[in-house]
Length: 89
Image 1 (cartoon, helix red, strand yellow):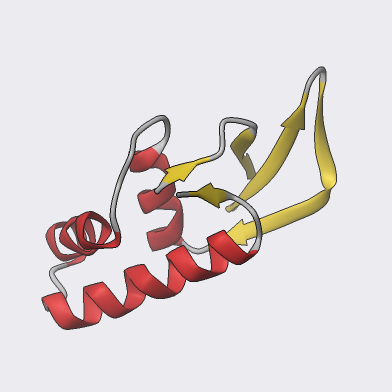
Image 2 (spheres, one colour; image 1 turned 180 degrees about the vertical axis):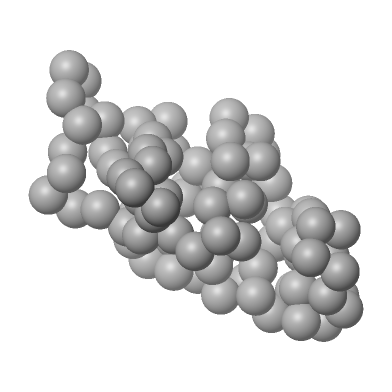
């Protein structure tokens, strides 16, 4: 998987959001709010190919959770971002 090139992460106050960059402007009409772990995964994966397994490994290393929980969490994030059109295969 890969994050689409027109997607940017922005910080608004304490919140991190995803917005689409369509040329000269950022499109704030469709935003996606990220929790801390999803923002971590997104920032670590910008411009790179990745797998859900790699995301699970990063979550395990960062938060010390067991692999099964990390894999489940990583899959949920990937599924939601794929549905939102943020990721491509």
